[in-house]
Figure 1 (cartoon, helix red, strand yellow):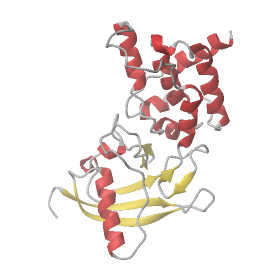
Figure 2 (tube, rainbow, N blue to C red):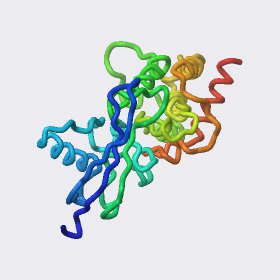
Figure 3 (cartoon, one colour):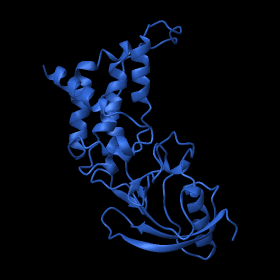
Figure 4 (cartoon, one colour):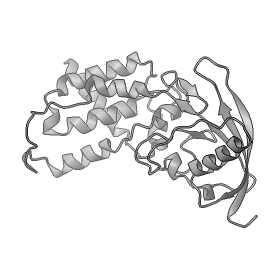
Length: 250
């Protein structure tokens, strides 16, 4: 084994469905290149399992570029793993040491039922967006660039909120399984734009109501959500959501 390869012991959560009993199963990952991403390491483990007629580990993935939010894994108790501001697919195996034992679990929340193994159903986020995360636009040709002026400060602020990729790490990190950071980010970036004003009065009410209906927990401002967020979405968004909600009720 070269200095760039690792032998790792994996403890992976296996579960056949939301109502099935789950448990950890031990796997060995041999000669893992430190240049691999975490998902590439799982690919190699799955190839070995399939080649020997065993059931592979089910996990979510899509773009593998850190922008889609699909790679939802809790690694050694931390959503997306130990590296700050990094999605699972961008976490490289050089982060770990030879001989390490790595625990791999799904994002855990009542609103994120397990589909199988490490795959969870995050459609609750989609329903929150559908309830109010949109703007009214006229049909027809696209408007000219800069037809609607937006102040630079507001544009920058909106962009920082819009950077949320909806991965659910905030929910997985929160002791209450709150979706406040996700919901607040979606409310905030639309509230900053002129195009977002027509629905502004009801947007916060509808999205917060849907968040509660999905049985996410309440926010108690511990900050674990922002700390776990791979895009470092600020807690200021939650304060803004609370203001938007209060104003809409008034």
